[in-house]
Amino acid sequence: MASRTFKAACVQATPAIFDLERSLEKVIRLTGEIAQSGCKLIVFPESFIPGYPAGLGFGTVIGSRTQAGREQFQEYWQNSVAVPSEHTNRLGECAREHAVFLAVGVTERDRVSKTLYCTLLYFGPDGQLLGKHRKIKPTAAERLLWGEGDGSTLCTFDTEIGKLGGLICWENYMPLARMAMYSRGVEIYLAPTADSRDSWLATMRHIALEGRCYVIACNQYFRKSDFPEHLQSELAADRPEVLSTGGSVIVGPLGEVLAGPLSGEEGVLMADIDLDAVVRSRMDFDVTGHYARDDIFEFSVRGQPEIKKP
Image 1: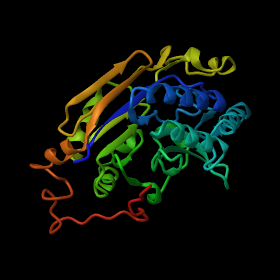
Image 2 (image 1 turned 180 degrees about the horizontal axis):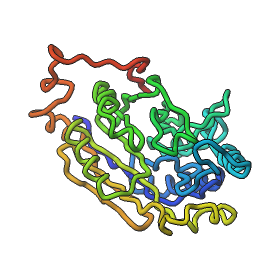
Image 3 (image 1 turned 45 degrees about the vertical axis):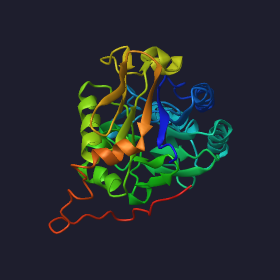
Image 4 (image 1 turned 30 degrees about the vertical axis):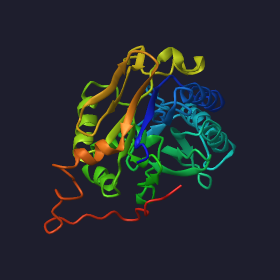
């Protein structure tokens, strides 16, 4: 029988904030380095390209916006990723060169409108863009920057290394969004985030137990000093120097922590993913199988696509 075990990597790194090219180059460089260890799946954090803008207000309070804030938004927009584009082509070529599945969190700029989205891109080892997920509900002040995705990007992908899917940051607190992933049989659940609080670990372990799936939760590590110099004075004065401590973790389908959590530094977590462990874990609990009560409950998602194959 062919092996159903492979190695996955969760990358906790510092992006070049507000710099599309340098952030992209870092993804490409790190992917090449990590692939040498034999990893078949490599995951990068939420909005790693061009960085999560923690601490910035973009000149906005309720009822007013400043010209300086609009210019900051324009700068962020100019450094965001169109899909598809030469930048996604380069990510795909990187995945192809190293024969890996690559998942990268980006801020996506819509090719038609000027709206930005918080998006997770999936690439196959043939270099093809398998698809994307747009965050369906930005949290709090994120709504200033990012539009809302819809059901059409609540995707899973049936691949040679298992069924990939996931949600971004606080979408993972949305029970029905999680159920949308479970209903498509997700086995490897990606959870790129910007939440570095200790409580995040409990949520990731709960999802692993609830979905009986592997969870790869990936965050950035960055400080105020990592922002471009002209933006450092715009960061909220009451925020600490370290704006995101990380907390990345890989969890197994019975809730066991396999790697991490990693905090206070850049680094890469690796763990073996055993698809047979997913089967074993569902002997006593299967949220969409023998533990479901379809005679009582009904569940549907408007516009959710069918499972895609590479």
